[in-house]
Image (cartoon, rainbow, N blue to C red; front, side, top):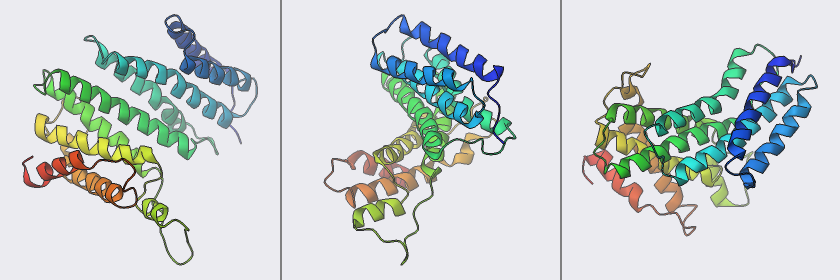
Length: 272
């Protein structure tokens, strides 16, 4: 039985539209905002029906579109102002809402598509990566607030790992054949797109930053000690995979492994 698209969906759609209207004031002709508007209009049409799964899919897409415009603004402006982290956290909360709705629901067939779930994880992890990279470079890695910075790394690595684990690697055997050997090798490693390759590198870099510049210190805001992530082990694993696929099936396609190898040397030997 499908979840009902009642007043609660209308309230959520209305709140998202009001956010879009505020953004439109500064970028009325932006292609991203026009794409977000299209998603909001489809959502407005769907809330008149009774298909909760369709509402969830359209609401998730509208969130992805609206927040992408804001995220690009923050990245382009290099996360300006003392409230930039607060803005990042607000976007993270919005991008987490679809998962929360699924978790709170007891309705059958009320779940996120794999691609949407993967995108939500990626967007949160990539946003935290860009924030940490920008702030770290701006402060020349002499971090003013290493505790909060470390928390961002902790959360970012978690999101990227969830993204990389959303789909299981393809188990190759006699019943599964591929004409392209390189494609088969990538799928066997759980690499389904260029974004997966980038996620491996981002995750490895964040593990490196945590080890080198934060000393893996615990953050008082963590519900679970960040050390439980074992940044060293995670970093080595994802970067080993990155180097393997970039120098193997992706060889000659423009992926550099120089930085990954330097980070691996630091993680494995403690030196760069």
